[in-house]
Image (cartoon, rainbow, N blue to C red; front, side, top):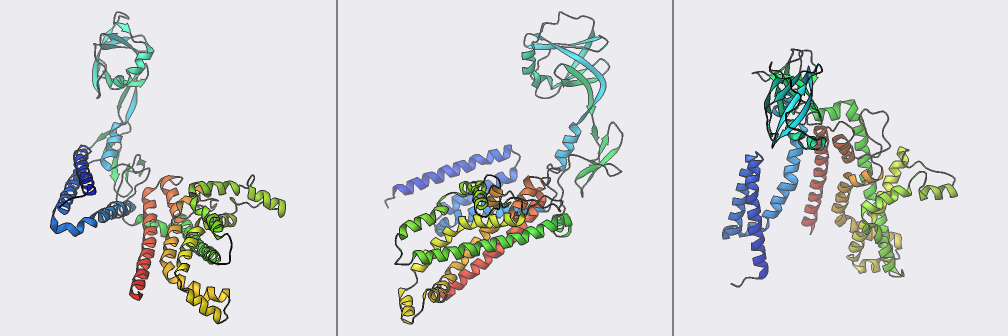
Length: 505
């Protein structure tokens, strides 16, 4: 059987993808992720079996879609759900083992402190120390190339020269990585570490690790135990030590959303506004879109092509350009909209500081951006309505309004209903509009958590996770999970509508 060039191209792409997949296996091992490495081997073995076995021929076309669904939907959702049951935040970024290591690396400075001079001797260096009383200590020649701590013994000396060529300041900067690894050991056993460019000071570990996993405070003598509920090492009096570590907090984040007034008050307000925003925008864009579609479908209208092109332009300009332009137009002091309103009506609305006006502005801008999509959809659906219906209606003496409400609208509503639900879901998560136009403002003045009048749930979540609410990733994940359930419910409704259409077909 003669094979086409496309067949060989696809085979070559498959081999390249297979080799790329195998190349990831050792990388996962080097990153100490053996589970991912094993999973990659299993996936590659399945791929080879599916794309080489004749019995699996039918599955070759659905496997990429299934993998895409797993990678881009199932895994992120599972990861988000997993985080929502932890205390993951800017204070609890590390695992308990890593947080313990960080605390064990902390050091406290002692009383001993001396000036340091560096002398070169070939490719090695001598360190000369002198205290405030003028007493000197010198080290043997040693290289400064270690990447780990190296202990360098010091010997008392009365000489002040003859150690080699002094290192210039510009070279001293280059030797900093090696000097930071030097632990100078005094004759009495005192250890000195670099505290500044030319000074070494006594330092010792701030904490020591005990057999039960607790830490002992070397300076004060207290014991700090890890609290698996708060995610901190705590003293007997409850004092917490940062950094914290991640622990499982079960449903605590979800309870905070609905029980803690600091969170559930802005959450309920924002949830209500999100529903209203998505509903009003969907209805407004559909209403404007269908009216314009009916008008552009009027045979007697001249220059319909020009009108259609002009009305389509808002959809052709990217939102990342349109929204900042509108932000400038609505500027309260220099915006053209306020200049015109001031000239005609003598008013300068506070679009960005008044909650009601800010919401109105958001609705206006998003309606402008969204109506062309609905107009195009409705124009296509109107074309599918048989002309005989309008001719029969005309013979019966019906007017344009009767035709619209009795023929056009009923016949369009059923096929466009799933798209309206999809539009509602899109507006429900319209982070781009809020982030570029108002950033969620104006902010509520009576809430503990930063939240604004125009914040949608998705922007509220973004602010909690990445901006001004302590970077609480776990709480943001809990809110994201709730948003996902709402959107998933809409998807189920959408699928049921498709099912109804299929049964009616």
